[in-house]
Image 1 (cartoon, one colour):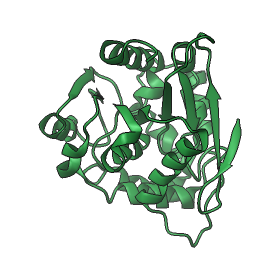
Image 2 (image 1 turned 120 degrees about the vertical axis):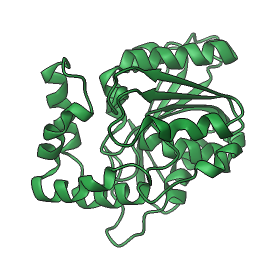
Image 3 (image 1 turned 135 degrees about the vertical axis):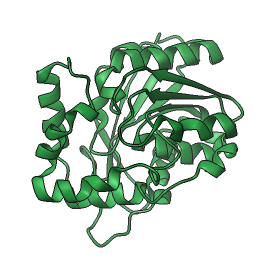
Image 4 (image 1 turned 60 degrees about the vertical axis):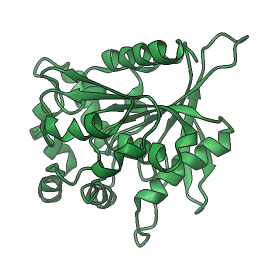
Length: 269
């Protein structure tokens, strides 16, 4: 794990994993995690991905090993997207394939819309065009009353299938409980105020949208704007899957990434 300073001075953590053939220049694949998550949540994706790509994982500000912004500092979507762009500049990686899981996908979408030259392809998992029409804001009073870990434990059926390994769920809950609740409320509140469905036509790169078929946070119809507005898009549904498909079905998600990139660019390119 390494760190760099964002333009506002905040220290952000990232990691690079690259097990590609050493005689071939690797393409870069950037992974952006969900709210309440961290780069560690992608652990089960990595064996499949890092053999073919230089994989960069970022801890979003206020998450994981990245620093938490000052309490009185406003949190904006522009600042969160700038963190991703500044990491790319720090690494001098050029245009990259960008994967976003849930809220990480919001940042990936915004990067593709506002700085299209940076994004070779966009791969979204359980990530609608903003969270304004979801029901995430109802989480906040429950989290305040019960605590984050208890809230997540009581709603774990929204996130994992019934047959999920209890040890995996316990790890997920422990990881999520490391988050600062006040910052999380600010982060979720920001995302829940956003809706850019009418701007999706600005995405010009090849795009994959993976939809959890049993989406509990919103509705599967909230993904339809991608079909209507993004010119080069593929939508696929994981039937019966809960929202946290990145954690519940990590190997399947990684295989979806490799399949899409292999067909569109040639695997590893």
